[in-house]
Structures are given as C-alpha cells and as structure tokens.
Image 1 (cartoon, one colour):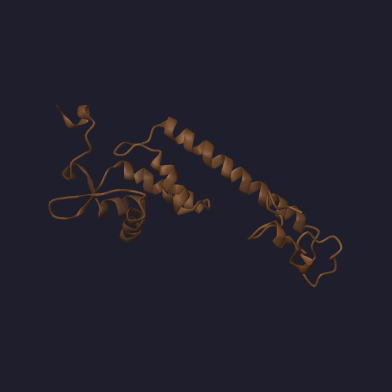
Image 2: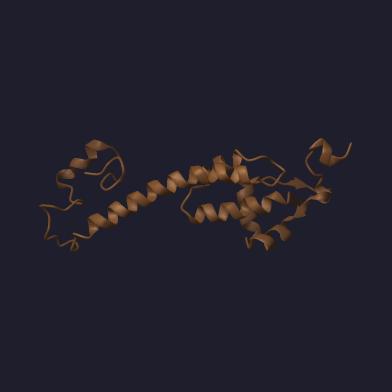
Length: 159
C-alpha cells in the first residue's frame, strides 16, 4: 500500500526543510520555530535531526501572517488551525468555514472602530470643552462598576 492511498503522514524525507519553508513564506527561521513551539505547526525530524515540514505548512504559515496582520491573537489562530486537517492542504470548504468565523470577528471589530470614529468626531481634544456630552469622560470612575478594562465605546460597554 502506498503512502498516499493509506493517508499516512509523509516521511521526513518527503517533507521540506525549514530553510525552504522560510524562503517560501518570507518568515525568519526563528519565527517558524516560534510558531512550532506555540503549537501552530508541527515538524518531524529527519535522520540528521533537521526539522522538516509538510508542504501544507506553507499555507498555514501564510495564514498565520495574515491573521496576525488582521489583529487575531496566536491562541485564536491556534484554535482555528486546530480545526484543519494535518498533513494536507486545506480545501476551499475548510477556508470558507474559517473565513465565516473570521468575518464575524472582523465585522465586530469594524463596528467598534466605526463607533469610536463617530463618537470622536464631536471631540475637540481633551482640554475638554465638551464634558457635558463627552462619551469618554468618566467622572469618579463610575464605569468601573461595569467591569474591568476599557468599557466605553465597546460593543457591550457603550454608554
């Protein structure tokens, strides 16, 4: 039975060295090792001890770069990648499922940024000549009662 028909993972000799992956993705070797340490990708060791990666890891690493650029955290990215199959390139269906999940998170972030932008339009900068209508003013730290962290202008904390 061949490796392909048995769906066995590729042997280390069939996989790509870290230097090739780094060149192909534009990532530093140290970044690839970091992502491996964080559980975002996996390598196997060749007889020489060299790390080897599946060709599908090129897409995974590219996805990591893009997702980080969009503001997603490494734990969020790791959870998303955990839903993908190992040792094979994700299908269009896999990416469609992920994009729906990311789209919802991005839509929430966009809505928050639009609220912030719109509320700041009335602000002339702190000095503050608009305390009676300022959405950021928090006299006596009254907002602390609604929970920790930044609460004003957030989806569930807008005042």
